[in-house]
Amino acid sequence: MFTWGLTVCDSLVRACLFGPDRILSSGDIDVATPDGCGVLVRLLVNLCLCEESRRGYNPTIRQHENADGRYWTIRCNRISSSGEQEPEMAMFYSRGPTMAADCNFERHTRGFPVAERLDGVDYPTLFAKRGAAGEHLSELLHLSRIRKEFAGSTDPGLHVPLLQAGGPVAVSTDDGWQDMTTDAIYGPVISQAYSERQDSVVDADEDTEHACIPHRQLVVAVMSPCGETLDSVRSADELIVVLADAMRAHGEIMRRCNLLHRDISTNNILVVRSPLDGSVHGVLVDFDCAISVGVDRKARPERTGTLPFMSVLNLEANWLERTEIDDWESLLYLVCWVATFGINKEDRISVRSGGKDLKGLRIYGWRHGLMSSIPENKRDH
Image (tube, rainbow, N blue to C red; front, side, top):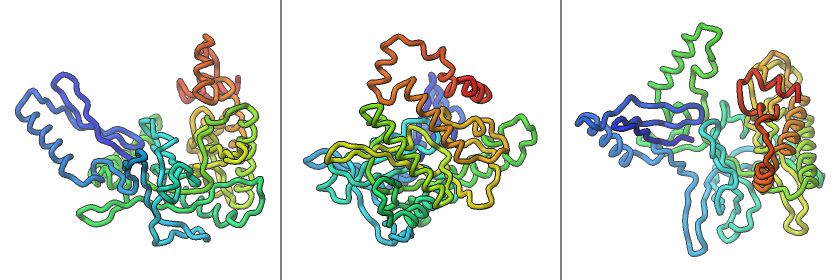
């Protein structure tokens, strides 16, 4: 959920803490002076001697190696058939992540195909997600709700994520067990400073959303079935089947659980391929942005989702109510996106080698440029 780094410019060094939403930096440390050298040495020594959790290690996920190669272990609580967390801890095994946390900000989500036995690590049946969840652990609550509603489903054409294990990640410190949250990472002094900064914002032109540190908590969720990322589809026909399955699940979850997903994107749809005949179906995952709409719907002006696929209403952050139509609009943008840029690495290489100037297309502006210009680029597409 965070990592440390150093920036070096001539003799000036800064210590940086890379978190889910921002980078915090120390002042300049001039290593050309004795005092600066002393500060840097003390910093490095303290990093070596402090608890692993303070250096960014997640104690529930470890990498190992045996005669068959490297593998990962993921430890978390099991979930009962009623969707409740059990005290029993379970161990899962993986060859490594297929969904990498390769961006500077946001939730740093990683996805692992996992098995319940080490001797089955090459034949995973479950999918584990590790990421920095938003406030109130909403995704775990939503997945528990989905499991309660769909665990007994006999519809072979309906594919929804069923939570099998998971929960918030806690670490052992000198002060006892502590949940790995942004408050614990940044400490009370920094968190309080940002909170006071938010309270002091009075200029309407200043972005109050970035005046504070959003609360995030590291969680692990293990669910079935096991799937691959969307770029594993092998044809346009497979893509259509996967997207159709995902949106059918979207509608059923909305109808039976009153949950609106709000983040339809290439990152949040898994491809599940049959080991028998190679046929595919799609599963909609990542319910961290989802909301419970219920009977009393209300407007939510915040922007939520993945930038190229966000609906126009979402981008404009206006007070109109978000509905299922916004998610279907996101699906249309997803289809346009993959049709233009390709769905997998081979497609993207082919597009680039074809000499097309994609930067001149309006769709290129869905990800780049000013936030205020993206809605117009979508309206005129």
